[in-house]
Length: 302
Image (cartoon, rainbow, N blue to C red; front, side, top):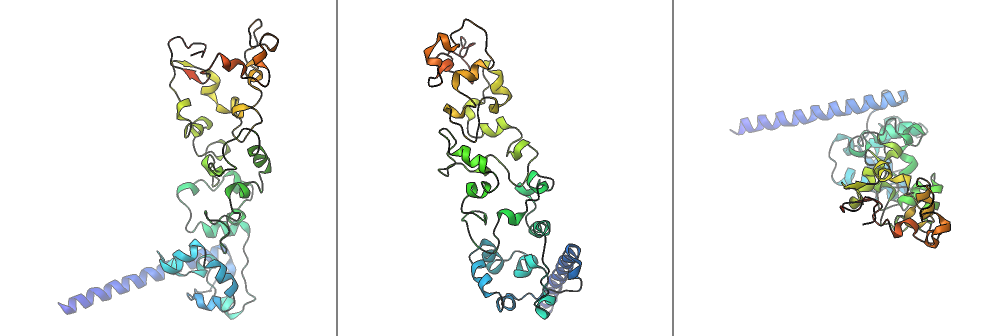
């Protein structure tokens, strides 16, 4: 019985050793393909060797989520290699510290994709950011914790996105906007920054579906539907912010008149003082402008 148990243990140990060797071989092939200079290099598998020279980097890195996972609870051989998970096999670098193997922005992204491929990142290849030469390290700080969320290189999502999209941040500071500045809504609430098949990298297939994530009461179905509402919320609203009420793209009555221009009705400014830029105008009477379920709500008045 004891001999059989020892035999099984030996088989198990050999199987683990084989899998580790196969994993190392696959990892080495990845690095050689990434940069031919890695050909023949081997994994040192000893973080302390790296710390001998890079103690400052190691200190800042120790506060990141990668450090906590790789050092305390590595889930596979790649994570167990710690520093070399992201920097590749460094035997040549140990022998010659000047041999640093620098990477391009695109190569850094491929390194990250060793682990980060599924979920929200499935559409990264060919995405707007990817095609605009925005890489992982453009937005994430791997070696130093600068944010409590997702290793962002800025403290908040808005600050990070505003690095490129300063016009959007300016809109978020207007009179009427989503509570972005208050931190209750983030850019990622509506956009999948890692790629999406939807326009504008939205988290849902369409603009309306994205808006309905929070504004379910506007979804309907309604007995009386307002066709612009059904077609696209952006027809009337600017989701990033506006100086008009309810994030409207223009002043209340002006917006309605852009479609409803028939004469003699009180929607003309000269007939109705409350249709001025400072009043609610048309929606004083047409109160259910997104749609109505009232039998007499054909004009969205109830």
